[in-house]
Image (cartoon, rainbow, N blue to C red; front, side, top):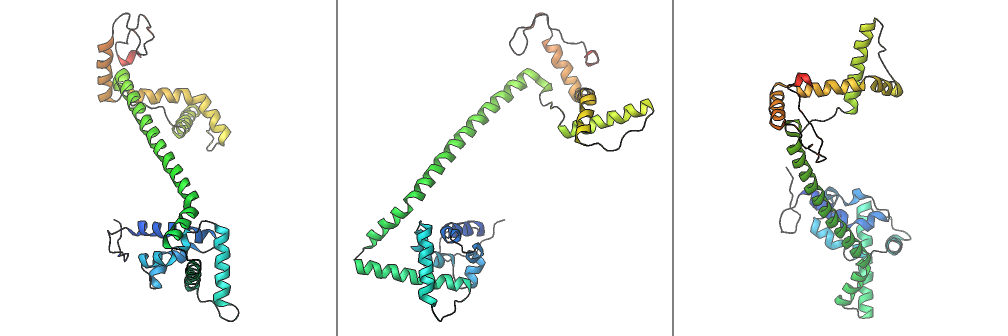
Length: 271
């Protein structure tokens, strides 16, 4: 069950995972220029007195700057301006907060100096974000195409399954033994063969020796696997009934190739 803690927004409750994902996305550029992801964990934010909403408001619009080189340079300037030459930077989180506040102050001063309106700043930020927006749209388009392709493949698989069920009847569902089963089964047949011949079986084999065992005993192992499947009491009766229902001379083969004189054995013992 997901855990929920108030995010400070007053909106619908979100799980911790969803809220952390939102913070991670907003701080992606900061992490890429060297800040530790742990700095932006929900626990760390709350330990320093920040709710999710308060922190997201703090980092805007700095978090929207997509040019990582410019962002890194801006942080370096902020750090030097805030702490150089005598002040000692506080711990990592408040160092980050102080730099963010200085950067926002610089942006605000620049806006006032240049008479830049909120709309103008918004347009600048949208221009910064345009490449990422295009990437997101491309990814969403690819996801949509993949989902459509998945639906097509699922429909095709369902049609094939229905066709196999129709053609194989009670034989549907049989699967050849796996590689691991082939190795184990072949080894057991090898041991029986050694006992029959009065020799001692080798307890362990390397990859090549295992492959050789499968080459020698794999056919017999597959045959036993099929016989075990066919001789299941319930399935055996259903198979005999199914075969009896399709027995007649000149039956067109189930794959549509029209083999002639097809007859089914009178019982499984004749197979």
